[in-house]
Image 1 (cartoon, rainbow, N blue to C red):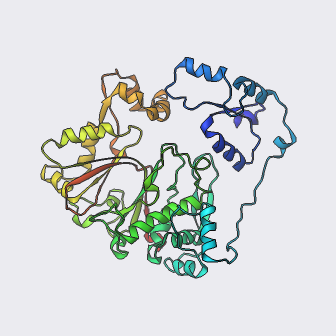
Image 2 (cartoon, one colour; image 1 turned 90 degrees about the horizontal axis):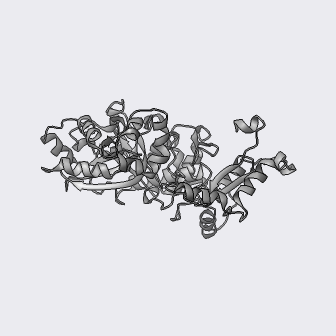
Image 3 (spheres, rainbow, N blue to C red; image 1 turned 30 degrees about the vertical axis):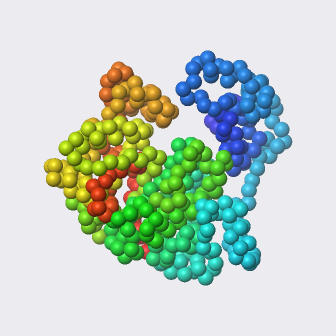
Length: 436
């Protein structure tokens, strides 16, 4: 943009699988005729000769020589359409015309307002009942969301969040949790090609007040509050950020089942350690929700047994090095670590940071290390610069202590644990009490 504002013409280059997406982004930003050219996907891992072949070959979208498209884009004069651009009417009607229940269900489905499962139709009476779950005014602005950094933020109100809570089947007493999630600024429907999801962890007294599950089947479909809070978070992220449509505003290659619902509570009563929200500076009597960006990989095991260190080292080495794990430990596992002398979560976090390592050659060969972490290495940022400078067979650290989180949850029927991709980016814990 700086080049264009300085009078220097530019052409954006993308891989062909993103043609629909970048066209949509250009339209959303009022530039539907922006000059764009395309090369085949993928580009990561290709040899210089293969990449040169892309440049010397045809654009897979226009079927014209790639370089001819670049030259035309740089030299062709601006048309009237280029100068006019595009604007949108952003407002939408508050109410839909009345119709039969079947027709309205079909309308919501056809317009991508749902997660493709049946919803509760958000009538005025149902939304009004939901709004009784908070003291905040229906027209109060809650926050802003967008699926990627290349799209505009959409601003939304308490009432719009309540509409999605109704659709998800939530109860009014759950609304403060859902509002806190909406206000976090973290979308549950990221458009990353890596098929990320966002996990939501609830701490404090509200867990018991609304009957959330922190015990047996904590990640399963066995609790109304867990299931509908997570679903409402997904629906509001989809509907209040401009959509989540595959190929348009969602590019996750495999997708992620966590996008249906991913809310759970920490089992504070059975944990030998302090709760997660206390680690983040809140008081035990505060009610909070924490959001973790990830949900991409999941590793599982049992223990700790005599060889737990080797087991954990292998699991940590199998984690994707561009995003640290959230360790979810059954209470039996947490107590087992205490019995082995690990008396705090921080001690286990520090052990994982020291022992989560990979040969530098394997580390550097990771696709997302190349695309996301290499720029930090080139900029001289630690520890990435040292990791890229290390010999291929030298072990390098994968994660920093501040990147790793530990949560105790589960029903103590088996000493099971999971490592789930779960980056706690910035301020990831938010007050629920502020939305009561």
